[in-house]
Structures are given as structure tokens and as C-alpha cells.
Image (cartoon, rainbow, N blue to C red):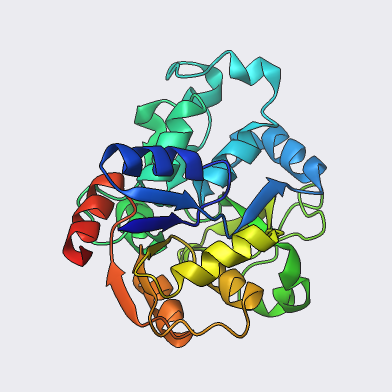
Length: 289
């Protein structure tokens, strides 16, 4: 069985290597290209305001990496030290899942300063995170949400943030101010009296595929390969890259029900669910063998 890893190029090799060690054929076909935000000053200013936030929520490991790329040198010496001013007087760091949690640890955030869903949570998402952090939210204090921006989604941004507080400090509110993504957590924060604010740390776009990449994808649509999707956007990019391809014979693993729904709506024939960890992925692959 061949497994297609669709994560960004920086993340895919580790998954390919792990799957090959487990005895699977594995191929990286990244469906999302990730890079630093165009407006880096917004992230720099967010670091300047670090101590003002009661919490900083990171939507993904990419959000962590690109945000911490701009961490002031003076704060980097505090890496992993719970008693340092950066962490003792700073905000909590929220992660939606194990990958983001791991990225925070790698960035030097002490374990004691991180909140994330339990390891045995049914899903790793904003809803599961909220169950862990709702009781600590203080009304009247800001929470920073660090996320990405879909370069192709500029036209729809005004709709994506409808009903969410726009009270972002002017120094942080570079264009695009809010990024692209779900606003469920921001709405819960606003309802609790907190002030949700956004900063864009990275940008996402569809990758530029070679003819070889397209040929590999066409083959994987019908040869029994299993596509692994950790993003609905990845599926949308795939279908856009091959607009005439039928996916009725294609098989995939999705790491969240919303991703599975996207795969179903775009015509994938066989869809299974898996948590976004290697151990869970291997169990799910066994069921497809």
C-alpha cells in the first residue's frame, strides 16, 4: 500500500520516513505551501505587547514556528525557564493539538505554561481546547490568536470574520488583520467578555506542481493509494490542480470530521477517520490494508 502525505514540504519528510520505517511505501505530495507573513511588523509588535495578553492561542505548529521566528533575542534566553519574566509574567500558550503542543515545547515554552486538549480527546480542535481553558478566561483581558492567511482568500476575508471583535491594537492590525480560519474560539472568547485579537504569522497558498507531481497524483487517484489529509484546504488545492480528475476510486484518511466532509463533498470514494498522530495513523492504515 502506498501512502500519500500532503502536509507542507517542511513537515512531510518526517512522516514519510516514519511510514517507510513501518513498512509502507510513502510519497510526499505537499498540497499547501507555507511561508512567513508578508507583514512581519505585526508579529514583532505582538511580541512587544506579549505581557498584555492573558493567553496566546496558536492554531497550528506552523503558527508557532513563524511567530517564534520573530521572538526578541532578549526573550529567547528564557527558553524553558518557568521562573523567567517571559513566562512568569506572560500569557498562557494554548495549542489545539499534539503537533502544536510539541512545537511550543521546541520553541522553548515550558510545559507548565501550555494548555491543550487531553491526549485522549475525541478530537483535537478549538472545541476540545475550549473545554480545557474556558474556566481560566478573564473578562476584559485580550487573548491573541496566532494564525495564517490564505493568499487566495483575500476577497472573502470580510465574511470570515463577521461577528468577531475587531478591536485589534492598531500596531498589530497590519493588512490582513485577522487572517483566515475558523472564528469559533474567538466568538466564545467574546461571549465570555474577553477581547479576541489576531495576528498573521504565516501565509498559505497552493503549491506549484510539476508535470511529474500531477502524474503521481493522477495515478494515486485510482491505484489504491491512501491520501492523508490534515487540512480541508489541501483537498481543495488537489481538486483545483486536477479539475477533470474523478476521485470516486480514491481512498483517504482525514484527521477531523470537517476534513472528511470536504473529501466527501469533492467526490472521494472511501474516507476513513484518524487522529493526527503517527500511532493512530498506523492503526487506521491497517484497517485499510
